[in-house]
Amino acid sequence: MRIFKKFFYISAMISILGISTFAGVSLEGPTGFLNVPSPETLEPNTFEGGVHYQSYGFGGNTNYNIVSIKGNVGISENVEVGIEKTTDSGTLSRDPGMLINAKAKWSISDDINMAGGVIVDTTSGNYSSVYGLVGADIAFFGMGFNFGGEKGLPYSTARMGGYDLTDIAPDKVFFLAGAKFQFGESGALTVSYNGDAVGLGFCGEIDDTEGMASTVEVGWIIEGDYEDLYEKYLNPKYDKNRLTIGISGKF
Image (cartoon, rainbow, N blue to C red; front, top):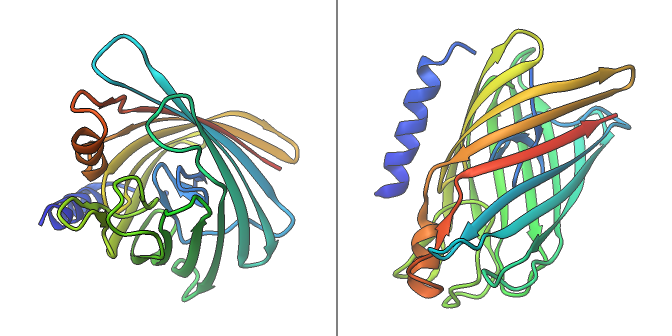
């Protein structure tokens, strides 16, 4: 029931936000909000690259760093593709493999889009994800499925959805949601849910020159199932820093 409580929580937040165009690369790789893809795609011949930084520890003063580098390109009016590579300075996981993602959208009306995407995780044993979204740049909902992977291995994870500690596998089905409140022309607050954790992000434009736009993002991710997983199977003192910092550029 935990996943449904979070889903209704994020839905309630969306309903009270006064919303309006701002997005970058998500932690999952595709364009979107902090920890969820959006139903938008990059314009043709547009490239967007970004870096996200997170950290964790085991109850001491030592912090280990997780750095993810990603890039997406618009290959047509409604299709984008991208890759992501993550490095982990600690022992939380094996050296992660490459993520390959693709997303396509279809316009329902002037303001509403449908989108479908896939995230292929090349890390041995990990699960890949397919998802569908409907909504606008300012608010959207969706769901998806995790597939592949090796059940029963606590380090076989997925990029979206929660984790079933009894089944020792990522959730097969997950829900997605996102909403945005824009401040003027250069800032936005985003609220997102990736099927496991709620993310709060603030994006600010730090440079806007002809042909290129750069943004910085500071996010806070509320604890989800994966924290319970790592505490149970890795170290009971596992402690993830909720703060996430990202920077991206589009040209």
